[in-house]
Length: 565
Image 1 (spheres, rainbow, N blue to C red):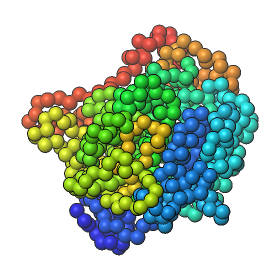
Image 2: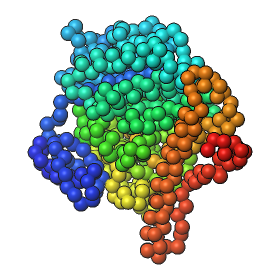
Image 3: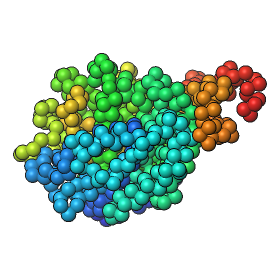
Image 4: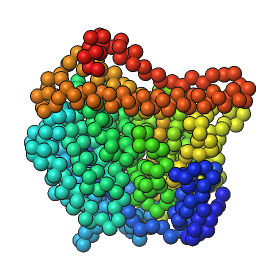
C-alpha cells in the first residue's frame, strides 16, 4: 500500500484528474480510494487556522456546546488557561489546537469565534455561564429586536442596524490573528429569521471579502414534526436560494433525526435541545478533529471539499456518527473499527431524516476515524472508565489501523458471499473503486460528564454526499407550495421589503436543485441498466425519488399554477 517516499515527492492518484493521470500529492498523509492508497508521512504542514461564526439562536446554542467540548478535549479550562501537564491524548508541545484557539501573552486561549444574535437572551446566557471568561467580549454581538421569524426582516435589519458590517469587522479581527487561515465554519439554521436573513447577508459579505477561503456551513434544516414557526418553509427556501453561490460545503443537519437518535440510541424518553446540541457538537468535533490534532492520515478543509464536491451543485453532504449508545448499554459492547464503520453507513445514524438510502447513490464520502486502535489488533480494549481524557500518567495511544479501515470499506462496497444480510453501499457507477477519502486521528474522543452518551476509545464520522439529501429539499419544497399557493402569510414578507418575484424565483431555484439530483439518479439508473444488460442480467434498476411536476399540479389549482408561471 505504501507509495512514494517519506517527505519527498509522492506519486498518487489525483482525485481531480482523469482516471490514470498521476498528480503530485506532496508530503501529506492521506488516503484516497483510487484504488486504496496511503502516502508516507513527512513533515507536517504549519497550523492552518479556522474561524467559526455562529448566527441566530440555533447557531449560538450549538456553538456554545461545541466550544465547551473543544475546551475539554484540549485541556483548556473555562477561564482560558490550559492544563498541559499529563494530559492523556496529545503531546503538550503540540500546537495543532491553535487552529481554533488563539493564545494571548497572558497564556489565555481565546476561541477564534464570533457569535451574533438579534435577540439578547442566548448571548446573555454565554455571558453569565462558567465560560464567560473564555470568549473575547467583542466577539459576542447581540441586539434588542429579533427578526420575527421573517427572512426579509432579517435582511432589512442587517442593513438598517449595520449588523453585517459589525460582524464582518469582528471576523476581520479574528482573521488578523491568524497566520495561515484556511477557512470558516458558519453555524446557523435556515428556519428562523436571524439564521436565514442575516446569515445570507453575512455569507455574501464573507464571500466577497475572503473569496479564496473555504466556507463550510453546518446548517440546521427544519424538521417535519419539530417546527418552531409556521413560516419555516418560506425562510428555508429563500435561504437555500440565496446561498447557492456563496458556500463551498453545506453540512446538512436535521433536528428530527437528532431527536430520533436521542430517543432510540441514547434511550432518552424526552430529549431536550441540550441533548440535540451535544450530539451535533460530537459530529462537529469529529469532523474538525484532523484540523485540531496531529493526524495519521490528513483531511484538511481543502481536501474534504475537493473530494466531496464533484460539482458545485452537489455540495450538500449528510453526516453520521458512531458509536452512539447510552452509557449503561455501552459497557456491554465492544466498539471495534469494523463495527463503527459499518454503523456510519446505516441510515438511522445519519443526522438527517432520510429514507431508503440503498435506493440512492453516493457521489463521494469522507470517513474520519479517531481514537485508540489497540483493541483491533488483539490487545486489551481500554475500559469505558479509562477511555476518556484524564489527567495524570500519560497513556500510550495506538492509532487506528488504516489497513483495517480500508478492508472494512472495501467489504462494505463488495460484501463477501457469506454475508447475505449485508447490503452494499452503492456509489455512482462511474465511481468504481473510488469515492472515499479516509482520515485517521490518534486523539481519542471525549464525552462530557453531563451527556448520557457512552464513552468509547474510538469514534467515527462520515460525511456522505448522497442523493438522498434531496429528500430534505423535497420536504420543504412541498410545504412551501402548500403555503404559497394559498398566499398564506405572504403579506408579512411583503411588508418586510419582500416581493412576489422573489417567491417565484426561490421556488424555481429549489425546483431546479431537486431536478439536478433526480437527473443524476436517472443517469445512474441508465448506466447500471446498460451494464447489467451487457453482462446478461435482465433485472432493471429503479432508483427512488421521481418528484414530478405533476405532484405540484395536485397541490394547487390550474389557475394558481398559471398565475405563478
